Image (tube, rainbow, N blue to C red; front, side, top):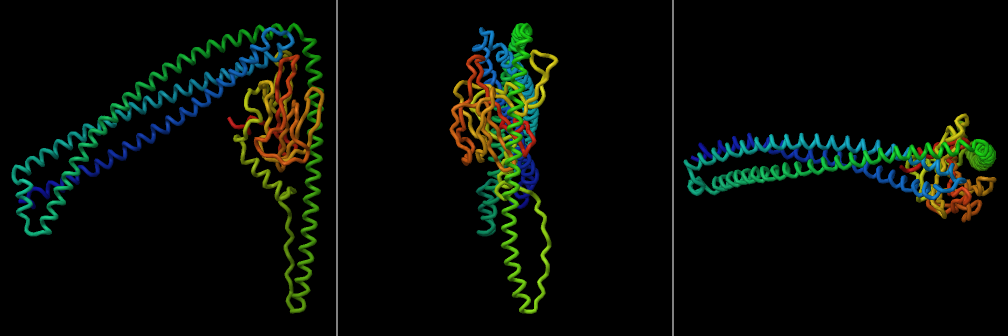
Length: 450
C-alpha cells in the first residue's frame, strides 16, 4: 500500500514544492538586499544634509556678529553669499532625498505585490498538499504503514519519508507565517517613509523661504556696499598686491625646493653609480682572469627626478584625493578656487589659487597630511604662512598666528601648525589654504573630504 500511495505522493510533493520554496526564499533575501542598498544611499544624503546645515549654522553666526557694523559689511556679504550657495545645495539635497524615498516607496509596493503573489501560491500549494495527504491517510495510517514494513531497512526508509513529509509541511507553514509578517512590516515601513517624505517636503519649503530671505538681505547689504565703491577699490587693490606677493613667494620657494631636490637626487644617483661602477670593474677584472667576457650593462634612464622617498610621499598624497581632512575643525568656504567676479565691483574679477575658509576665533590649524615644514614666512595682509612639502606636493596655510612648528620639522596629519589670525576690525577669522603639485595650483575642494 505504501508503495502505491505514500511514495508517489512524496515524489509529487517534493517535485512541486521544493523548487518553489527555494525561489521564494531567494526572492525574499534579494528584496531585503535591494531595500538595504536604497536605504544606505538615503542615509548618505541625510548625512550630507546635516553637514550642509552645520555650515549654514557657521555662516549665521558670522552674519549675526557683523550685522550692525559698517566696516564688516563685505565680510557679511561673503557670509551671506556662502549661505545662499549652501542653502541651494540643501534644497537640492532634499530633492534627491525625496526622490530616493519615492524609489523606496515604489520598491516597497513591488515587494508587497511579490510577497502577496508568493503567499497566494504558497497557500494554494499548501492546501493541495494537505488534501493529498488527507486522501492518502484515508487509505493507510502511519502505524499500519510502518508495521507493514518488510524488514528493518524498509521500516527505516518509511520513517525517513514520513519525517521529510512532516518537515516540508512545517517549512511551508513557517514560510507562510513569515511572509505574512514581512508583508505587514513592509506596509508599515512604506507608511513610515511616506511620512518622512512629507516631513522633508515641509523642510524643503522652509529652506526655500529662508533662501528668499537671504537674497533680500544680500541685496540690502550689496546696495549699502555699492555706495562705497572708492573704498572697496582701494581695499581690493591692496589685497591684490598682498596676494601677488604671496603667490610669487610661494612660487619662488617651490622652485627652490624642486631645484634642491633635483640636485640631491642627482648626487645620490652619482654616488650610487660610482659604487656600482667599482663593483662592476672588479667583476670585469675577475671575469677577465677566468677568460669570461662580461656583457655590457644596458643604460637605464630614470623615470623621475624624485628620490624614492619623495616618490612614495607623492603617491601616498595622491591616494588621498577627496579624502584629505580639513585643516580646521569648523567653518565654511567663503571663497572658492579659481577666478571669481567681485561681489560688489561688477567689472572686477579676482583669482584664488586656493580656498578661503571662514571659521571661529582661536581656531587651530592642522596639517592635512604627513610631510616636512619647508618654510615659515610673513606677507603683509596674509600674516604668517607655512609651506609643507609632501614629496612633489605642497600645502600652504596662510593668515596664521601663534605658529607652533619649526622649519625642517617632520609632521604628521592632524599635528597643530598654528592658530587662524583674526582681523578684529573686520570681525573676520579666515584661513587661506592652497595645494600644489610641483608648481601647479590644485583646487583644494577636490582634495578635501566632503
